[in-house]
Structures are given as C-alpha cells and as structure tokens.
Amino acid sequence: SFKVDSTGTGTGVLGDEKILNTDQQGNTFFLQDNTRGDGIFTYDGENVSQNILNRPLRVIMRYLPGTLWSDADNVLNDSYDAAAVDAHYYAGLVYDYYLETFNRDSFDNQGAAIKSTVHFGQNYQNAGWLGEPLNQMMYGDGDGVEWLDFSGSFDVIAHEITHAVTDKTANLIYQDESGAMNEAMSDIFGVLAEYWAGLDPDWLMGEDIYTPGISGDALRSLSDPTALGQPDHYSDYLNTTADHGGVHTNSGIINKAAYLLSEGGNHSGVSVNGVGKDKMGDIFYRSLTQYLTENATFSQLRSAAIQSATDLYGSNSSEVTSVQQAFDAVGIN
Ligand SMILES: CCCCC[C@H](S)C(=O)N[C@@H](Cc1ccccc1)C(=O)N[C@@H](C)C(=O)O
Ligand SMILES: [Ca+2]
Ligand SMILES: [Zn+2]
Image (cartoon, rainbow, N blue to C red):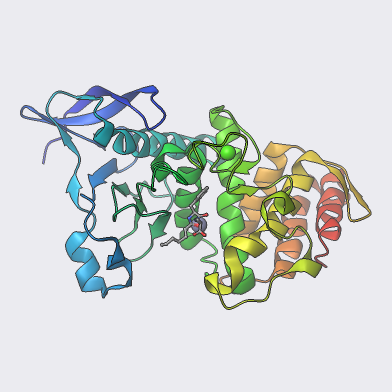
C-alpha cells in the first residue's frame, strides 16, 4: 500500500512532548515511521490476558502484534497513548544510535522493520524481545507502583532492540553464561545508547520507570552491580536453575567489566585504565558481531574482547591492556 509520511505529536509516559513520524491513510494516522529502514511500527496489545506467553505459538500469534496504533488527529495526548508514544519515538532513536554509531541498519543490518506492542498483558511487569518468528518487542504497563509502563524508559527499549541485534549476530543462547552475556550486552548498549541520546544518561537501568514513588533507585547498576543485588566478580557467580540460570543476576559480572573498561577504577585489587565509552562500545560491539558464538563462555568473551581491541588498536595498544585489566578485575581469565 502507498505510504504517506506525516508528523504527529504525543505526550510520553513521563509527561514529555514528542514529535512522531506517522503514516496517514485517508483521515486516520498510524504509528508507522516510514523514515527509518523498512519502517517502525507500534501496535496496541489491548491488554489481552497476559498469560499468553506460555501458550502455544499459534495461540500467541492470534494476539500479537495486535492492531497497528491508529489515531484520529495525529495528536496523541491521552494517557492510554503515552506508552505507544514512547515505544515509537524511542525505537526511532535506537535505530539512529545503531546506524550512526556502528553503521548498522536496524537490528539485522538490512533495515528490518522494528515492531513493538504496548499494553501487552494486564499489569504485566516486564518488557521483552520475542525472537523468531514474531521478531517484535512487547511492553507491559507495569502496576503503577513498582513499575510505570515499560516503554517509558529509553534504556529499556535500547535493551530490547539489542536483544534483536544479539539474535542476528552471536545469537547467544539465553541460558547460564551465554545468557548472562546476552543480558549484559542489552544493558551495556542500553547505557551507551542513553549516553548517545543524552537522555539523563547514567550507568543505571530502568531508573525512569522503576518505583515512581522512590527517587534515586533503579533495577540494575552497571557501575556498582552489588548495590542492587548483582555480583560484580566471577567468584560470586550465582549457580541457579531460576531465570534461565540467573541471567539477570550474573550479567552484573560482565556489566562491571564493561563499566571498568570504559570508566576505569580499582576493583578487587586490580587497577583498570579506562578507555572511554566509545572505545568500550566498539570493543564490545566487535566482540558481539564478529567473534562470539551462541554457546560462548565468559572466558571466551575475554578472548573476543582482547582480539577486538587488537584488531582496532593494535596488539601492543593500551586498549588491549585495559581489556585484560577489566576482565582480571572481575575474575574472568
Ligand atoms: C519475554 C519475557 C521477558 C524476558 C526478559 C527481558 S529480555 C528482559 O530482560 N526485560 C528487562 C526489562 C528491563 C530492561 C531494562 C531496565 C528495566 C527493565 C528486565 O530486566 N526484566 C527483569 C524485570 C526480569 O525479567 O527479571
Ligand atoms: Ca539509565
Ligand atoms: Zn533482556
């Protein structure tokens, strides 16, 4: 069908105004951004029952992605619109981050359409990337106390789109050490994208939507994972069957290594010379897209990062030394 680019406005989850790229069909406007790759599409999940995730795929595909978000006047200021406004706008920003920073055209580097469903489930307290065959993100509304709508935080959307990048590259199995690295990559590029966008950047995850009644907290910290219940050293790796082998816990070890590589510091008796966010991003991106395989271990990430730094800066570079220091500091050999 023909595409008619139009420009709308909307109010996000935190009450901020945004300009939106929409598509006009007749007198109706849709959250379809035709200006980026094969498009960015935002859908209404209409709060159908949340327990469809553990239903058979044929059942899930009856409900997802839902209906393409439509609006009568291209002004999306209703409270029900807010989650869609942010999912749509932030997905565009993350597309721009990957294109500008790594010359990557969407998550598959071939301009793949970026699809998001908001108002997924009922008071659903999570966001996620649903890989093949759906290849879309979904965002819950939270409960309004512990969580606001999950698309209201830029780092969440960068986290989820990075899962899509991971799936199309290293395809790290979502279990144990490879799963923890899968989660860590999503947090690390969530932070780097937030700094790139300049949206109140920090080394925290989810601070904008987590416990709106309490300021200063977050779901995870990359600068000090232990502050929010994660290990920051391999010796404290959590062996568990829960959460796919503790992928949201053990990611702290890799997150800490990335933080130290970028910012430097002394940790566990090891002094790390920081290389800065841009070089850390280049080293981790090259590791993810060129070297890691789906069953990679933490030790293999160390080797991949050393090889990536060698490729980028030379075998005797200070960057290679910093990579070795950062992984030493978190006990990964
Ligand atoms: C399909 C079901 C969900 C799978 C886990 C997704 S990828 C995930 O990791 N979601 C993030 C959401 C997030 C991201 C950044 C900041 C805050 C929250 C996550 O960390 N979820 C936590 C709550 C979890 O699943 O334990
Ligand atoms: Ca953040
Ligand atoms: Zn995740």
